[in-house]
Image (cartoon, rainbow, N blue to C red):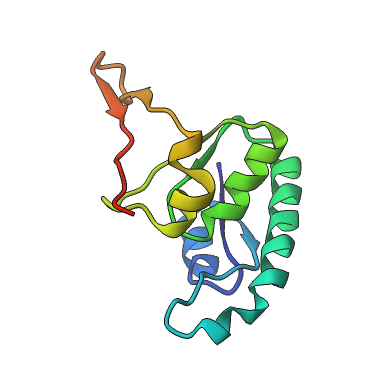
Length: 132
């Protein structure tokens, strides 16, 4: 398993300390309160996608799991470009911008997963209609 996080973020310290491998991309979220802070995004986004493509090419995952938030967008986009299956998990009732706009409902289908331990019970992931 390889986790992908933001370069300079707390995950650079926390993930390796927990015993997991980490790859990072240089990205940040959209600042809706101070739009002038977004001036670097047109440069950061293509660079983060190139970095994510390199990560995906090097690691060669069977599936990519996006856990929501702007950091997952480059890795999931790289998986889409490379034809690698991906699953989006959004913990909030109202999915974030990255999930809603670029990667989410129009391109997704519900999926099922078996619980660990082979209990025979199934859990089902369902799409939650967002309030736009």
